Figure 1 (cartoon, one colour):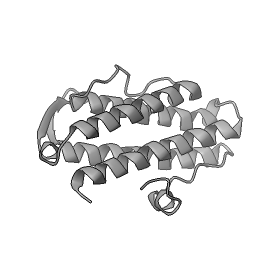
Figure 2: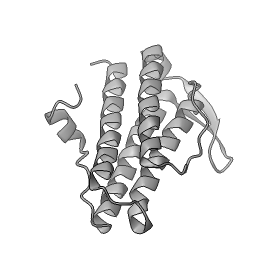
Figure 3: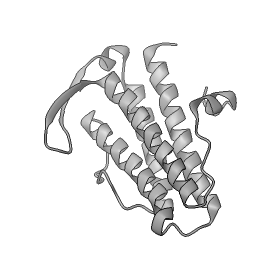
Length: 160
């Protein structure tokens, strides 16, 4: 497996896991208010952050706050759009491109630069971190969280 295939696989996992979280939220049938609203808020943040990183990478991406207010249906729409955007970005990339450095300004206004491959790893790890928070918050709210472990996705063939 070459490096680009590795990232395609990771982003396939990321998309699957985000959709599993959303599917779990939808199946609960509960109104997402009070403490039950936190899982949806965190998923919306994952979506907003992924759009931001796509912009920083120079890909065509819609403008969205890093902490947007999105409902379940809006999350689903945005996940559909993100899936296509990441697929297009990775299809247009090359192994050489993964080593390029991207300059950007973070949310605190600080200038930084990072390699493309480090940004891609960060996006997937960042989302997994927040999915862990979503699971914990869902349990606190009396909901059953989605099972989004990478190994589960691999064993069930949700990812190649």
